[in-house]
Image (cartoon, rainbow, N blue to C red; front, side, top):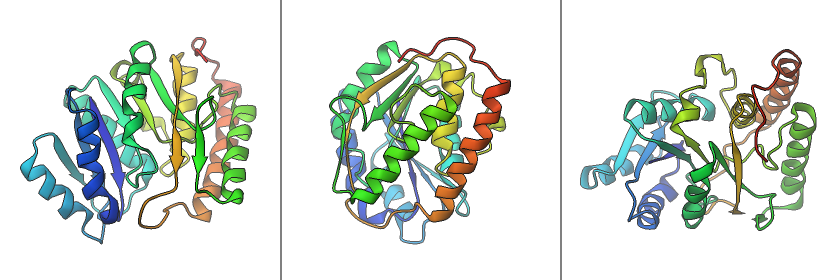
Length: 243
């Protein structure tokens, strides 16, 4: 399996996060890929140092800041090209605890996509102000209502994708390049009939550094919802997605 961390200026976190993650999956055939968007704080150098001493660590350095969505897609293509059967995506700021990995991996045994969910039973959010909790909950309710998505957490980036579902995705047709990619990707997977599973996580505000979500990204997410709504009217589901 391949655990993918998209990064931009995560030097405060990545040096500790990678060893902690690998320790959790020490008994498994698991590798880490960092997709770095030309960080200016030395993130890439830290990962290169770790990769030099550990063959399970890999770095995909990209020129320029190209967006979270394109980083995910680059990671998925890397996973497919290098023969990994499971691709797991996580935030690189400790908001997604590696301690949840065993449960997420186990859920992938009978699911095509596993969502690390803050809104299923046992999930939750810690250390967020009330306005961020309301924005997140509202966005998920809107996505489920407008797009008919069954997952309770459409915007969680803590996910696992089986190779079989990634091979079916036409990445060239995905238009979202930022955080709204999460909504579009999950919607497309459901419409292809993917078996969606949810595994509870406790989301904790980042340990260090600053959030990369801007107002522009929030507005782009609403634009994605509108575009995907019209796609929904033209592209019926290929089959039922399991709740």
